Amino acid sequence: MKRWLLAVLMIALSGCGTGVTETTGVSLSAPPPDGSYNDTDVMYLQMAVPQHEQGIEMARLATERAARADVRDLAAAIAATQTDELDQMRAWLVEWDQPIAYDPNPDAHAGHGGMHGSDPAVLQVLRDTPAGPDFDSRFLNLLTGHQHGAVELARMEEKDGRHPDARALAGRVIKSRTAQIRQMATYLRR
Image (cartoon, rainbow, N blue to C red; front, side, top):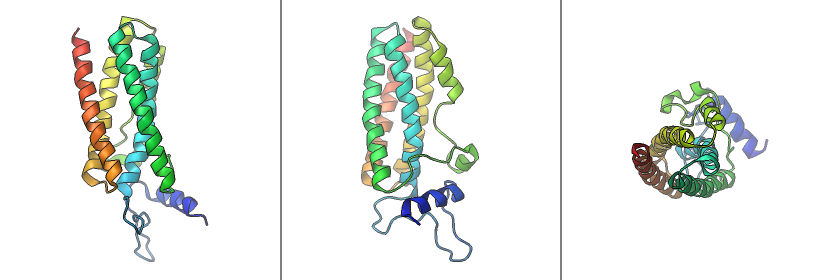
């Protein structure tokens, strides 16, 4: 059986935790022999991919619909940054021969704080909001919550991840998203 297929099956059967087979006692999701990454690195990237995709969609909507130039500028910067990060995360998962998708069952993620993306219904509300000042306010509020989720996810990676570049990305995410949250709070007060 191909290595990638075996990895997909093991992840699907074991959820996010490290599974142990009954017959051998060997971890189903042990890190590779070279120790370059661990399960937390993989889980972080797999959960951050859809979280980034949602953030990019939200930002692109704002570049088209926001009434204020500062909101449009922030949204364009967010879309550019998160697109670059998304490309890097996907490349690592492919390089590591890991699936890009994660288990969509929310129960599989209860042990590490649940899923960190925005609810699809929330995104639909933003999609349905027409251009103008109401869009700006809704976007800023929704993206603030979304970026809080990104920070929490990145903190998990910083704490338990092994891959130095993935951990560095998590550190940058924490710093940039925290700054964005502060900036959006000032925009909401205007």
